[in-house]
Image (cartoon, rainbow, N blue to C red):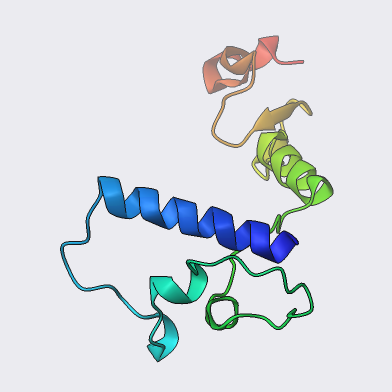
Length: 122
């Protein structure tokens, strides 16, 4: 029953597509198979529900299903790694003052450590 409903829906959809968008170029065949509309849209309806073999159209099509490849946990790990405060390797302890400073920055009281102001140095 589901197969016949699916075939009827495919047939109606194909008719509407052909009515509004007539084919300009010849129809493509899937996987080298000769597929006609008459095979899927018979003029007489059959009530034989015992035929459950897959049609050639179903055998020749591969249905693409989107997959979610990145889990929520891995996505969370990635965003936290990108947004974290980066570790700095240029933080050093100044030999003169003993303060934590960056390598390229002078200490806060750098004027006291000039040779002329040595008496003000702690």
